[in-house]
Amino acid sequence: MGIDPDFERDREVVADHDGHDVWGPVEEPERLGVHGTHVAVDFDVCLGDGACLRDCPVDVFDWVETPDHPVSELKADPAREDSCIDCMLCVDVCPVDAIDVDASRAARRDD
Ligand code: F3S
Ligand code: F3S
Ligand code: ZN
Image (cartoon, rainbow, N blue to C red):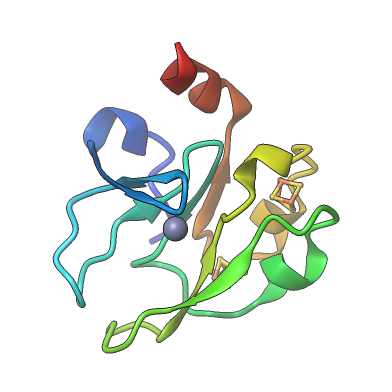
């Protein structure tokens, strides 16, 4: 199952990671939640494919190490989600639908 596009309704922000939101629940190392709000990556779905890092035209993502996570020990972190131009390539190329992009969700958070 991919990321829940309604995570904003179903989850709460529990932490900040280098300037972006982390939507819980988080119970390290098994459950890591969703990172980002405009560009959201479900770390519990991401299996470290890397297509998003390779294809994003504005280099939004960085690798982050997640030792002992049951799915993969590398995740795509939306480190520069504010640079996103909503091209949706990452959403299209991710093989497990771990990414959801929604600029209006980020705008609501900034209200
Ligand atoms: Fe990059 Fe995805 Fe935005 S590919 S520009 S983060 S929609
Ligand atoms: Fe992960 Fe999908 Fe990117 S599996 S590394 S979010 S292409
Ligand atoms: Zn993060």
